[in-house]
Length: 357
Image 1: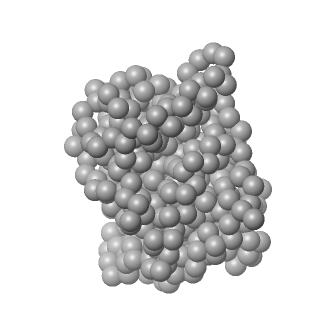
Image 2 (image 1 turned 120 degrees about the vertical axis):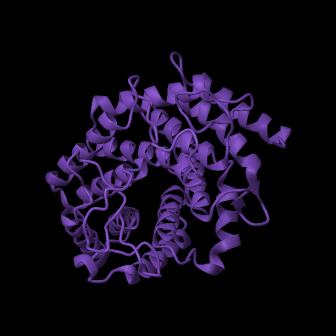
Image 3 (image 1 turned 120 degrees about the horizontal axis):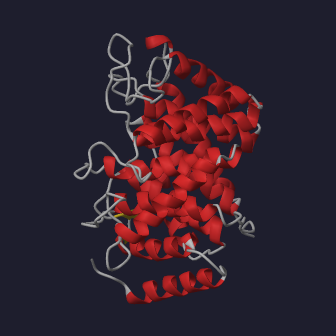
């Protein structure tokens, strides 16, 4: 990997400042600062994307830059976020996959929360409008995975729920809140939540649970969606369902040390490498809405394992959080950063950047 020394020195200086803020114990925001410096060595200024990774993965990379900035108060990556928007806004962050669109909508909602720049929120609203076109009455409702309309599955619907609820909170749009409620009512009766309390990947052509892999990100995104909808409605049953899924995931998808694993490890494809961090990010969202000691313990244990056992010589993070480190990609780096930020959030209050003048 071609390391840019000036950028790394700057980031490590920031990490040192963060470490100085903590008198005892590991500072996961400092660890995240070092890891983000490494992530940005994959960033391509001319495209606003990250090299050798997918379109949706870049949306998640934007999310961790924003998340780090909001937690730490460090604004050095604000230009990269703006550059990504500027380089790609002409296409509206749309493609044939409704889940890809959902990741970008969430990234721009987060960017709006950090900057109060209205163009980010407007873009998220426009993406959400496009996503609505994926809903029809097949299987009683729900979004299709793609505009080819061949598969109804968990992830686009979980993202649609989350985007709808979060937009409703920021815009006061009652139609968005109606969509969030409608989505959850459909999802809850779709059959995708299995007897273990885990979310399988999707539905068969006969609209039955297809029994396919309960990927960690499918357990995660629904937690964030339910937490966001709870904040809008006050319906405690939403939190009960979220806690049930979170507990099922922690019980069934971790090793004896409490470290999260994907079933495809150690050779997950480009998509699977991203999934675990999304679970950590959304468990953090649930914990913010309804704290549980076991969630904090999970986030801290996974962050500690990444730093101690799955870190390369230049603060690269690999796929298997229990280690050993082998190789890093943009997807594994962003995924691990989500876990580090999840642990860091337990000791830091988010800071809102002043709106640009």
